[in-house]
Image 1 (cartoon, one colour):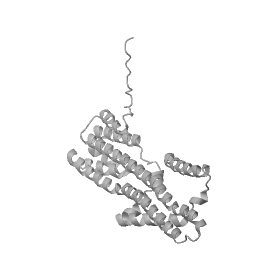
Image 2 (cartoon, rainbow, N blue to C red):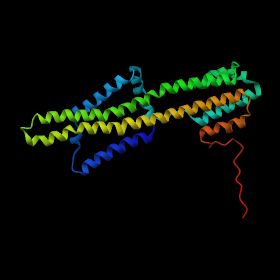
Image 3 (spheres, rainbow, N blue to C red):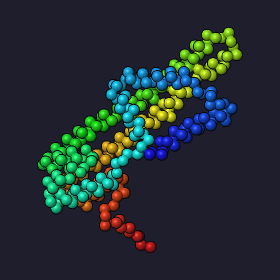
Image 4 (cartoon, rainbow, N blue to C red):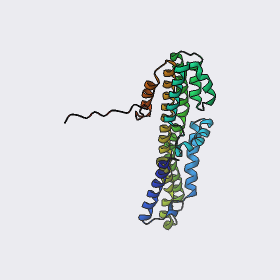
Length: 263
């Protein structure tokens, strides 16, 4: 679970409600089902007009990625690639054909299969980079959808507020109810702005981070397979690929030496 996402939403909502209570208000003042229906329905309709239905449906399935940390482990992938490199150096690249059935990552499996089949490194890179590019094109539509929704919802909230004011102005004969009616009308604006800035736009940013992490993992995998195909020394390959993990991974048996300056 991504604790940061849960705590972020909880802190934002708690801060707003606590501020309302401190100012002497109560939660019932901002609980308006009609305003919520206007904002949610209007925002959903605008998003469906801009994006295909398949993208809208995919956006619901990707919500879990906001609250769950990806299972992919860069260290484990690096260790697996180094193991493949040692085996290929001892027995040849064709010996990795026996490993294809046990590989769970479809990207690694396809890249390694092309390498075993004798694909030239330049051709393998071109094929897999095209796959990375096309996957990024598809994945980028999801955060774009949330960003668009975050742009629509405040405006829909204003529409809801104006609709509420229209109803208030039609009952000016009950002047004591006008102030209360205006307050209720502006709840739609709160819903629109709050939905955009507490949920939709931050969700888009978190999804873009997830996409970048997946892209980095695929790039590391591709560089590893090409290095194996080119016959690079496994230890050198491990050092090379550790850059994708922030350069914090040290080759086993080769600790970093610290040189002390002369006193």
